[in-house]
Length: 125
Image (cartoon, rainbow, N blue to C red):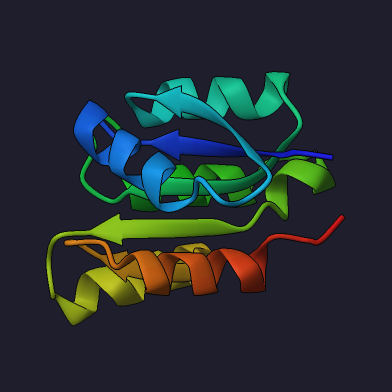
């Protein structure tokens, strides 16, 4: 059975790179260009994992995670989230983890690191 992964990034190129890196996995992908759309999709689809850029138009990735973690539905508030960042700022990472992100990946994205994280965070089966 395929798991659904939600990709939230305003760059179609980054979303495609992630899909290529994860091609060998049994995954279906749903794309969102901003966090607001991502929150809507989470309520409509059986998402198993989220990868979101920290820098998004409108609501940023940290606020997205805060809203996700505040959701009344346990299956949504407990979804694993990986935040993407192009910045090395430790305070940004701390804000994301404090908001409830499970992990960070720095850009440029490493295929190996991404696959290792997915293996740890995505329930098998």
